[in-house]
Image (tube, rainbow, N blue to C red; front, side, top):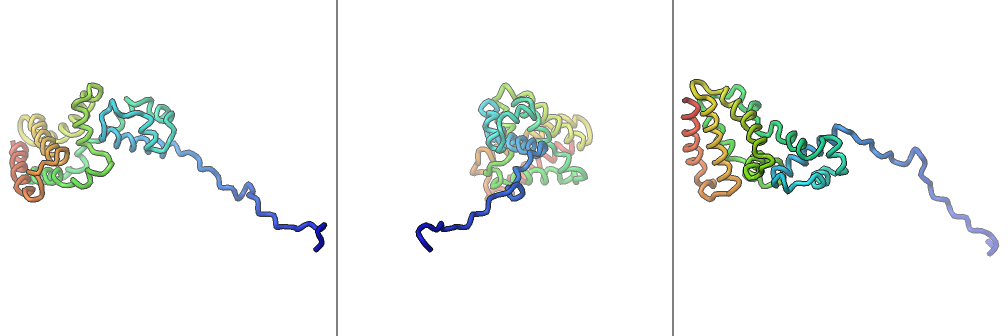
Amino acid sequence: MTARQKVLRPVPDLPTAMSVPAKPARNAGDTRARILAAARVRFSLDAYENVGTRDIAADAGVDAALVNRYFGGKEKLFDEAIVDAFAIKDHFDGVDMSRFGEIITTLVMDGSEERREAKFDALGILLRASGSPATQARVSERFHADFVLPLARLLRGRDAELRAALIASYLIGLATMKHALGSPLLGSATQRKAVATVSAAIQACVNG
């Protein structure tokens, strides 16, 4: 080969229209679901006033404008985020009401490890709403509709709604002490006695 001769190098393959991966189309249903899931976690971890739509959008991996597009703003997003947050109907259909106190108290006492993870926590919604003028009434109304009233329908006898509200009070107090405050008096060593004591009080409300 002489100096005048060109050295020919192989030309690298160029991407064609068929070989370039197509950008996936946005699925509106999936995007909406991701925003809602992110909002449920955010609202249970922090007060409503401290949560921004940009935070929720970032958690969901979407543009902040989509929050308003799909939900019409933070207020309406919050309302959707707490739908079925306190529902018990799926857990207690057909439950043996003679053991209701034991069953529900055990459920509340368990799951402390899961509550430490960044996931939706209905108790967190309740606790944060208590100090939030923007959400207190709405959360109270939703809790009454999704928990107290369905529970009252499971009870027999007089004052069923009042008894259901008293049961809810026991459970919220127990959950707060156990999971939110991490009371050492409700640890594994005393769990059996705690369950027995609270179960008896709740069962008394069930029996009327």
